[in-house]
Amino acid sequence: MIDLLEKLVILKALFEKDKWSLRELSWRTGISEERLIEVINELCESYVIQRDGEFIAIASRDNPTKIKPWGWSIRHELVVGSTQVYARGLAPWSIVIAEHQIHGYGRHKRVWESNLGGIWATAVISLPADKSPYLNIAIPLVLQRVLRSIGVKTWIKWPNDIVFEERKLGGTLIEGVAFQDSITVYVGVGVNVNNYVGIPEATSLKKIIGLTPRNRVLAPFIGYLARVAKLVIEPSKLVDEYLSNLTTLNRVVVAETTDGIVEGRAVEVDEYGSLIVSTKSGAEVKLEPWRVIRLRHLD
Ligand code: ATP
Image 1 (cartoon, protein in one colour):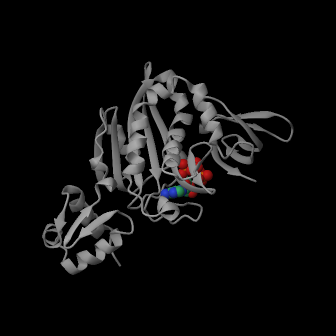
Image 2 (cartoon, helix red, strand yellow):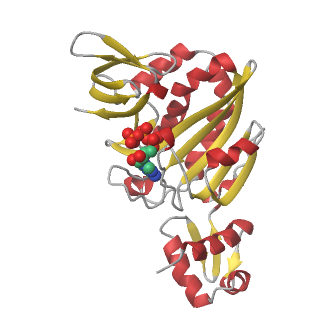
Image 3 (cartoon, helix red, strand yellow):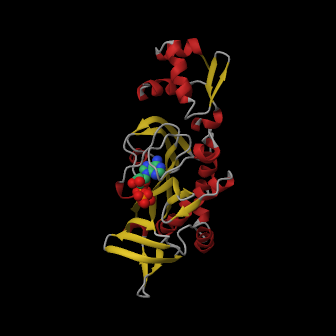
């Protein structure tokens, strides 16, 4: 049985220096060379690790510290409670990326499983307060764009998930704090890349396309975030693109909301990201994302 702590000690060294010989890595971590080989074999399940003779390195394409986006300050941590909480201490245009979250959470503080090898990050952005509601559609959409651009036929499941063949591949989370006319938004993103996920309704890029260097997703995602203030200037364009990527559209759904159950066909999404559901009685009910605790597709 290989311990998480053992893996973390080795990862710490691998992120610290570009290349290690087995012997130096053993000295650095205090783990015997024989044991190192066993642990590294297991780490190779969740990371793109290069081995050249006795040299070991984490591939730079899988190393978030190698992303140097202009105008952003990047924090890389091995373990945090939640990147959403950590980000509260950061200035706008910072992003924290963790290898493991102890208390990762999703909407309504539901547990978000965050094992080694995934993308668990929160970006802090600042916007005029009146633009922030558009992020409900802009953020899932940019993650969707990135995943499609690497050849994975994903869809958005309203309000904030990215699914592949009905299985959850990733999710986004938007939390904000307003101050006068501007708002600081904590944009969380979780993508199952090469991590183990113990949830039957979930999937990962590794399962879909094989071991994937995380920067293929992370770098373009941060690139889109840098332009998000521009994106939300024309929300109507975003809505069209969001709708054409939305698997929930025209499906029968049941939503558990803060004021009861709503069942019907999903017919529209407005620019604030609210879902319009046409019920059996012919009424159209508007579901704001924050009001919906859970949404299921019934067909
Ligand atoms: P749900 O997926 O339950 O319909 P939701 O889309 O609002 O709800 P969130 O609350 O954002 O989801 O995320 C938490 C839920 O996601 C958990 O209840 C669990 O079912 C699922 N989940 C947790 N960790 C992962 C993960 N790493 N990958 C995919 N799904 C996950």
